[in-house]
Length: 533
Figure 1 (cartoon, rainbow, N blue to C red):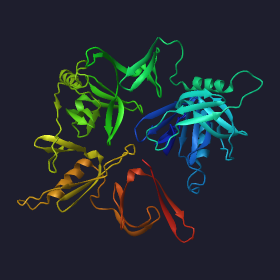
Figure 2 (cartoon, rainbow, N blue to C red; figure 1 turned 30 degrees about the vertical axis):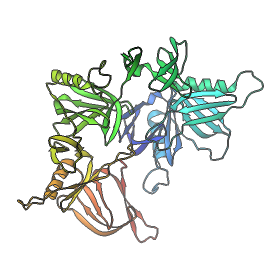
Figure 3 (cartoon, helix red, strand yellow; figure 1 turned 90 degrees about the vertical axis):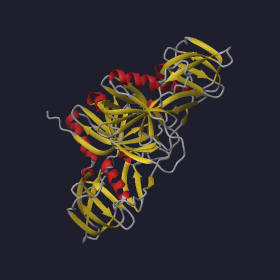
Figure 4 (cartoon, helix red, strand yellow; figure 1 turned 180 degrees about the vertical axis):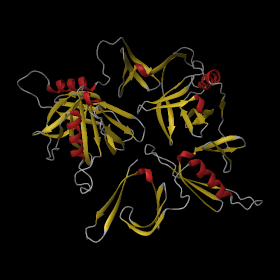
């Protein structure tokens, strides 16, 4: 049988209530989802899938896959049959036909219950808890999202893992469990036991190896009873409890207190971060003779940087900690923060700079330069273009640097250059625009601001109108974006110039073109379907 593949763009995969944008591909053997934001790829083998349902997820239809081992995956963003129905086949029909033909599996269309109710029947399906009313699905909870569960009289309390990308998220859910007069068993306790069994969260089970009572802790502050288990440490305080997996502990230290009588017992955790558009992605870094490997512990994405591709490395400051800055020969820059200063428990930990410096010199034959930041306040600096990075210095000391890959537009006026930046939705506060004053040179007729803008545009590689346009359409009435625009068509993009706003659309992001009739029967709509990357 030919391995025919079915692909959908602009599909989202649900994770802790957050919809990660991406693309989905179905083949005879598997489902493959690629996150367009992080690059992470998820593979689900067709043989591992128990069944698939067509459900609602947020405001669109979704494909729900339940694995034989229990976990559930949901992919949203598919199209209803009403979505430009004269041009696009209903996604449910396409998926249903594909699964039946290639996987010999029926796609069940599950209609959600729209009747208001405060009671339901709970069913454990694999690692998913489903609530139904009169045979209709109310909602379901992937139990992998539950991090704790407790019970009281006729009540079960579930606490959930949090996703930092969600502005609003569910913290806790309380369920009332009615008692059964015909049995002595506590139904709430039994329900809690089932959740704990399916969820697999850190729980205190078995006999503890040791118990330390009322230990005075500096971080977290207060007195805690510490129970030591084979896989974790459990801290029980007056107000808060903490659970620490043994696998996350890097090193243990026994350090003297200042009074000379007591000792500090210190646990070190891995907390290296990789910077991306101003957001610090937590992870782990590994250096070998051939490469640097960074694994994002949040998304699972792995970045590989070959040692042969690196031009040089600098030791800089990133936020409140030292960082390793790597500039590639091709121009791009990587920064890894969260390393330790030599002042950080200096009597027990070798300075990270010394460790990295020795490693690079021995294995890569490369010097690690320690770049001290300029701490003097100033409003003028010398600008240097180093690869695809713009560095600002004052008296030989680095003020700050800008990866030009983060710049999406640049314009100039008299003695001024304006840079606009790409935005990262994970940052609560981000830089939108920067204006630089460029002093004029009386000895040259060339405009220094225009020359500076040209260099930025050359290094940044953002979309710009260059060369002769293929066609120009003047004062075209547009529904989205609303208004009249002059549309210039270039080989690589469409440029829309309006009275207030301008837009640039890469040709590569256009998925389909439609010519649809207007309601008045006299005019036509020209529709461009663009990927939401």
